[in-house]
Length: 208
Image (cartoon, rainbow, N blue to C red; front, side):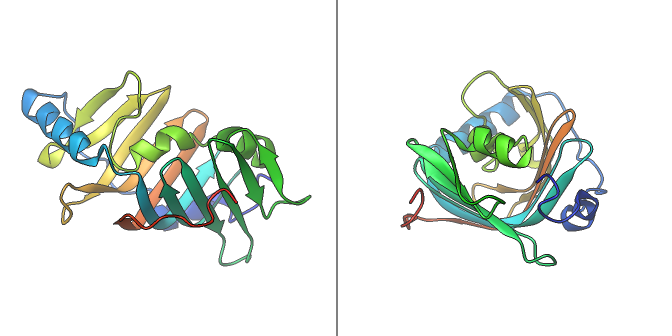
């Protein structure tokens, strides 16, 4: 099950993992103020659709593929596809539980997405926190930040994970991340975002 999608060796090509690391500096008042303003502007954003590529690894096995992630409040629809193999899986749910489709043995149900993915695929993906991190925000709870150019986060440490922001879309206001690499050894999650649509369109069948 851990090799369900493309081998993780392909992830470097998909996600430009060899890109140089951004400049990092300790937070100053200007950077912290800019981040607070970004978080205030994005705090109410709970409906969006993200298109990109995702790669995961546990240090030995992993997988990657193209991703469509739709968030509608507390409900989500997370679909990962591997074009070469034609395989895919779909994770949907919300506060009342999660369901995973497309895995061997048929559809699986669980209390939450993280537990279901860990049990079915052997993947450690912090989806609850990642929902904030993909917007360049801190999830609830303690966090440490470092900043790079334009007073944007370059490194976030939270819940035992290190989140490395490798690129930002500066054409948007406020800017949104384009490459988000999260790691908690031996686990790694690499997300490359091709498009990010923030709009009020509801996810009609999330969790169904």
